Length: 84
Image 1 (cartoon, rainbow, N blue to C red):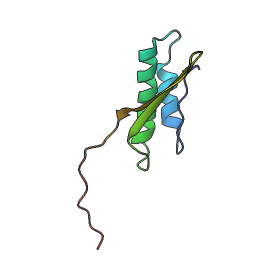
Image 2: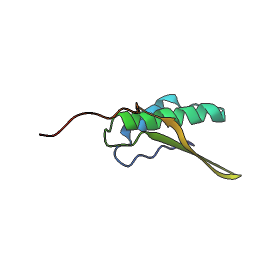
Image 3: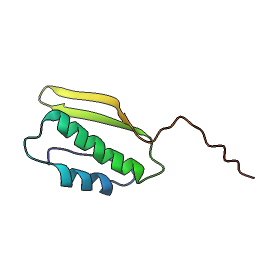
Image 4: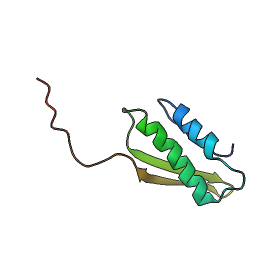
Protein backbone atom coordinates (compact mmCIF):
# COMPACT_ATOMS: atom_id res chain seq x y z
CA UNK A 1 0.00 0.00 0.00
CA UNK A 2 1.18 3.53 -0.63
CA UNK A 3 -0.40 4.57 2.70
CA UNK A 4 1.09 3.91 6.10
CA UNK A 5 -0.08 4.41 9.69
CA UNK A 6 2.38 4.15 12.53
CA UNK A 7 1.36 3.59 16.11
CA UNK A 8 3.73 2.94 18.95
CA UNK A 9 1.41 0.86 21.10
CA UNK A 10 -0.79 -1.18 18.77
CA UNK A 11 -1.05 -0.70 15.02
CA UNK A 12 -3.57 -3.51 14.38
CA UNK A 13 -6.71 -1.31 14.47
CA UNK A 14 -5.03 1.23 12.19
CA UNK A 15 -3.91 -1.39 9.69
CA UNK A 16 -7.41 -2.86 9.64
CA UNK A 17 -8.90 0.53 8.67
CA UNK A 18 -6.25 1.10 6.00
CA UNK A 19 -6.66 -2.34 4.47
CA UNK A 20 -10.45 -2.04 4.46
CA UNK A 21 -10.64 1.46 3.00
CA UNK A 22 -7.74 1.75 0.58
CA UNK A 23 -8.48 2.02 -3.16
CA UNK A 24 -6.14 2.59 -6.05
CA UNK A 25 -5.97 6.19 -7.34
CA UNK A 26 -7.62 7.78 -4.29
CA UNK A 27 -7.60 11.60 -4.25
CA UNK A 28 -5.14 13.05 -1.72
CA UNK A 29 -7.82 14.42 0.61
CA UNK A 30 -9.58 11.04 0.68
CA UNK A 31 -6.23 9.39 1.49
CA UNK A 32 -5.64 11.87 4.31
CA UNK A 33 -9.07 11.15 5.78
CA UNK A 34 -8.48 7.39 5.56
CA UNK A 35 -5.12 7.70 7.33
CA UNK A 36 -6.68 9.97 9.99
CA UNK A 37 -9.45 7.39 10.51
CA UNK A 38 -6.81 4.67 10.84
CA UNK A 39 -4.80 6.61 13.42
CA UNK A 40 -7.98 7.51 15.29
CA UNK A 41 -8.89 3.83 15.53
CA UNK A 42 -5.54 3.20 17.18
CA UNK A 43 -6.08 6.10 19.60
CA UNK A 44 -9.54 4.98 20.75
CA UNK A 45 -8.30 1.41 21.24
CA UNK A 46 -5.42 2.50 23.47
CA UNK A 47 -6.28 4.69 26.44
CA UNK A 48 -2.62 5.60 26.88
CA UNK A 49 -2.42 7.28 23.48
CA UNK A 50 -2.59 11.00 23.01
CA UNK A 51 -5.49 12.73 21.33
CA UNK A 52 -3.83 14.39 18.31
CA UNK A 53 -3.73 12.90 14.82
CA UNK A 54 -0.73 14.21 12.88
CA UNK A 55 -0.51 13.57 9.13
CA UNK A 56 2.65 13.59 6.99
CA UNK A 57 2.32 13.48 3.21
CA UNK A 58 5.53 12.35 1.53
CA UNK A 59 5.83 12.69 -2.23
CA UNK A 60 8.33 13.75 -4.91
CA UNK A 61 8.15 17.38 -3.77
CA UNK A 62 9.11 16.49 -0.18
CA UNK A 63 7.30 16.02 3.11
CA UNK A 64 4.39 18.07 4.43
CA UNK A 65 3.53 17.70 8.12
CA UNK A 66 0.09 18.69 9.42
CA UNK A 67 -0.01 18.74 13.22
CA UNK A 68 -3.34 18.15 14.95
CA UNK A 69 -5.09 17.26 11.69
CA UNK A 70 -7.74 15.81 13.97
CA UNK A 71 -8.21 15.86 17.75
CA UNK A 72 -9.85 12.74 19.17
CA UNK A 73 -11.92 12.53 22.34
CA UNK A 74 -10.66 15.70 23.96
CA UNK A 75 -13.45 17.40 25.90
CA UNK A 76 -11.42 19.97 27.82
CA UNK A 77 -12.93 18.75 31.07
CA UNK A 78 -10.77 17.32 33.81
CA UNK A 79 -11.95 14.43 35.92
CA UNK A 80 -12.69 15.12 39.58
CA UNK A 81 -11.61 11.63 40.55
CA UNK A 82 -9.63 11.64 43.78
CA UNK A 83 -7.53 8.75 45.06
CA UNK A 84 -8.27 8.13 48.75
